[in-house]
Image 1 (cartoon, one colour):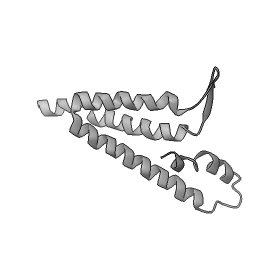
Image 2 (spheres, helix red, strand yellow):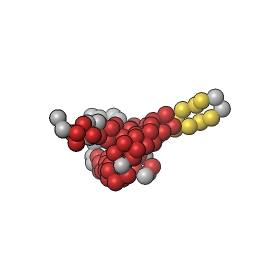
Image 3 (cartoon, rainbow, N blue to C red):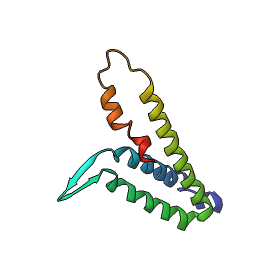
Image 4 (cartoon, rainbow, N blue to C red):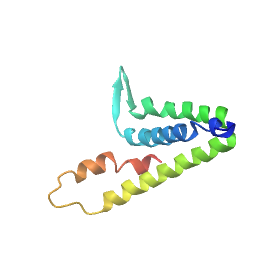
Length: 113
């Protein structure tokens, strides 16, 4: 293996984790949790991890690559939200009783952006 391959050995893994955590944090933001007297969203646990991965990407792989990955994450969020929105508007099967639950949980995600 040459040095170039070793430099980027973990880039795709860290990038994937960053984008995954970003998407998960927007989905779990619909859940409200109680910690003592505070009411917070579930994203309070996951979203800060995206900053850690963003810092790692910037420090290890540089600002240029980090910026591309961050934009990839935002595009992925947009695509996820658009998909949730379109699927929410599609007619559900007559025997499926969970359309209202889907709308309450995933239907709100596009509004978070």
